[in-house]
Length: 183
Image (cartoon, rainbow, N blue to C red; front, side, top):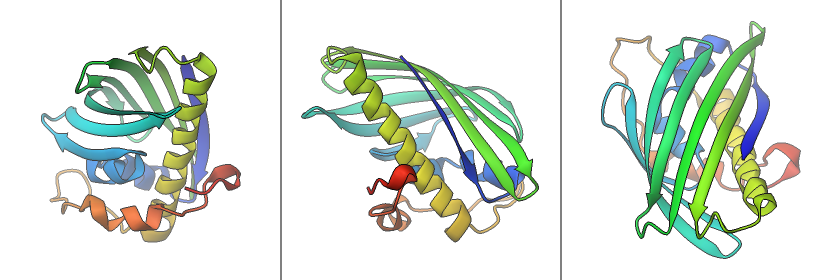
């Protein structure tokens, strides 16, 4: 299934790019992300929990950034499975940043997602709606962080202080998401 969308953030493209490539921030913004660990310059291990139609699943994921073109493009692949191997997930992802004006960036994303196993048995519509809702929640969390809480990140090569996942989680919960949905 193909999932795509876009949203605007009131920040420069360079600022959005620096934040969107920060694994600590992504851990706080991706719905259900319990942990993320950088294992190589372009590779990450993540644990993400989701619930679809009463079925809960916890995926162990490997994310590999396959191409970056700062500050406008990130391509990645995500592969993983539930601990019980009941469901398998694979996704090819594209994230692009377009400068709308010097202080506004449009974030566009597209993923070709495949889910097999017990979650894959659900109707395509149920899975697609769940993933789209997760995309809206991610957009809301990222926008809120960058527009209200973000401090300028150092340029590449400077030391980046770690950001605890717990620090932003309470602010993200209960936030109003696009389309008036509340988390």
